[in-house]
Amino acid sequence: MPGCSNKATKADSQSSTAVPTRSVIMLLAASLTTAVIVELMLYYRSESWGNSNNATTEFIARSPTYAIFSKSESEDHLVHVKTLLHKFGYKRVDIDSDWNLLWAHDYPYANFISLKSLSANQLVNHFPGCGYLTNKVDLSTNTKRLTFLPQAFRLPEQSELFLQYARSFPDKLFVQKHNEHRGIKIKAFRDVELNMSDSFVQEFLQNPFLVDGYKFDIGVYVVITSVNPLRAYIYTGDVLFRYCPKKYHPFDAEDINKYIVGDDYLPTWEVPSLRKYYTNFGASMRDAFEAYVRDQSMDPAGIWLQVEHILRTTIQEKEKDIFDTFRSYKTHNFFELMRFDFFIDANLNVYLMEANMSPNLSSAHFKSNSILYNQVLYSVFSLVGIRPVSSHDYTNFMSAEVNDITDDKNLATGLNKCAKYKCDKSCNQENCNLCLPCLSGSDYEIIKKAHREHLHRADMKRIFPKEIANYRDFNFTSETKNMTRKNAWMTQWYAYKCEYDRTWCS
Image (cartoon, rainbow, N blue to C red; front, top):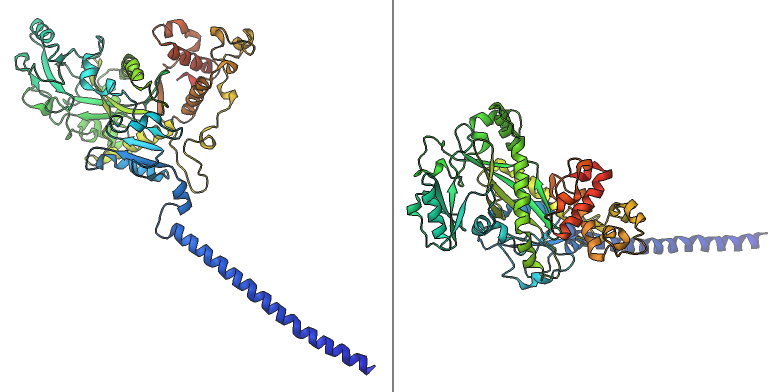
């Protein structure tokens, strides 16, 4: 049937012509769409990564921020702080912008009234009132007589007391100090400037422990994370040892390089007996010093027990003053990094010399100190909740997603006592003050923060509340008799945690 055959062939011919046309149109549309998408992807990628080595524009816009407050024209002393924050993914902003962390080299509270009302995701590296610890005059003269503080007198207010003391001990030597810590030199008591304000005169200790004949001081890094209740930590990774550039003997009061540690101090690696430990065997400054002490048939262990005792006692002595200063602040998002400087006498007795706010963290003078400063900062940041972020896992600074890996089960303590006194039914008794159903919202947040600090303390060791050497010998009443109610409460919580988990004992 040729007719039917011809019609079919014509239809087939028309059909075969139409299909490629539609395909071409669809192909062109798909290609155009793909081209547009690719172009947009390339555009956004170039916008995000074009001239940046850090992160995408979106990440930068959302990343945590920090601001710097320093009265110095140079920021060389902040190089390690800024470098580590940038490595952590933090972006620097102006101090008047919306920042998450304020790193203040100088005391900021007289300059920024807004710090009285910090938001929940803001943090400042100083406590209001920290000067009660770091002000050299206040620390040395406004403290009850403590045996680890060399005798000192505030001038001019206590000039008569000083003269009486000096005449009673004519063989003693003295140094006059100012808050600016400049121009320190041994003086006869007759040469002391009794009318110099904001200064004090302090007894000069004459029997130092010497290393290869060099006098030295030691700098211990301390972090306070909370006041009322008090929580304080000591950095255990190393200690800063600074040796006088000249040997102590023969002694000459006119040559301060024999007894005053200045900027051009002698570092550990240049002290002959320490060099072999530090350079040849990779010891830390502390380990090298301890090895030298053992070489003298002496035991260095007692030095650090004294240091911790001095730190606890000193901070507790000033805690009330600090708390009274910042109690009017709406939020208490503060921490304090300090360096306490100590002197060691020939019998390994330890004396506190001063506490430094914003301790020098610049390795410009001694490059080898950079590892110490970086490790100190890393441990501090980790402890207070400043941790690395990335474009893949970033969430808001100090937010629940980042920090709240803590659950009720991590905070619950004293379970038998809580059940015995039915603290889930009534909280009107002392035995219930640490039971979860009886915790106020603020108390719950306090122990939650303490738990996070414990998890992220790195090379920080808790010194307050004091470590519990043996829980069976721990006497709560004896240990807390001189504590504030809040500090006793915090100590009890750590003791409960320590009872079943030794890692919580220190």
